Image 1 (spheres, rainbow, N blue to C red):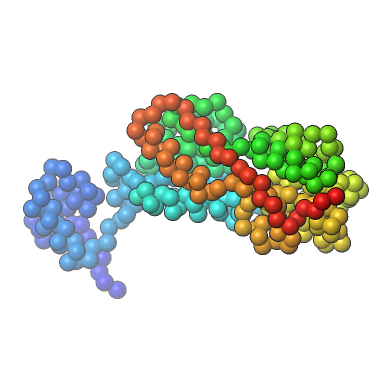
Image 2: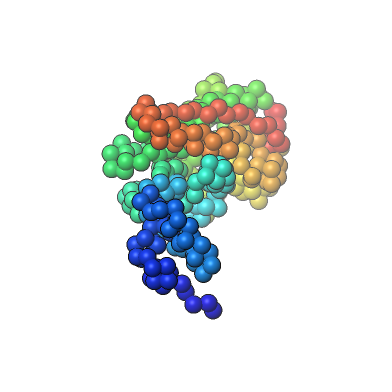
Length: 333
């Protein structure tokens, strides 16, 4: 194994101070002559010096780091980065940030206090927050002094914050109207809460379904708990000809449960999800759902950060349209 090259050794060989060599490594060259910078860089290359990248990024005023914090909610059961919506969002953000010349650093946590600590630890240029829909963003804004973008936040728009939402109400409305048009008159709604984003999706569904009947099942956060709930409520489920789940994950899981019970989808119960992630094409039947564009949201996130860096003080609320994507999991009654 090659011996580690030390800054002190490089400085001694060049006849320079360790501070000068360190400043060149860390990009602080404003007060150093071009000749000296070239000498240091030439020796660094010759000795194959590998710098501590974290140190370089922390030392710069412009770190080029964008932190992405994901709410490691209990419903993910310790597998938050495997969730299809989360992984699609991170994938789109990664490539969009790379195109813009930024590094992406990810943290998953349930602790809201970790957000500020994470940002300050790495001298970030900005942040993107996923899954903290009703958190206290104004207090965070007052503490952090860097711009950030929120996916699906529920808060009064404030300066230095961008809230990137989709039209959740209209997505639900499109599902309700479609099921009504297909002849369905009673539907079960599946969600683990009745607040924030899910509340909007279900309210939109009820408007689109208009004079149809709905039955709401508030499902547990864990998979086994949901299975028990479905078994305990088979009579209520069988009384419906359609189901609307507020996420594709819940929809695909529900389809699997129904099939285990010998219930045909869509023969006996039609099922619709929300998000249009990879599960929709891989489950059987292919899932009808509401589509949102992860790539477009990532592009808008980078654009919003740039606006905030440029000193835009107006609150930024950017709603993205959604559309119903019809596949095979719904039949006409």
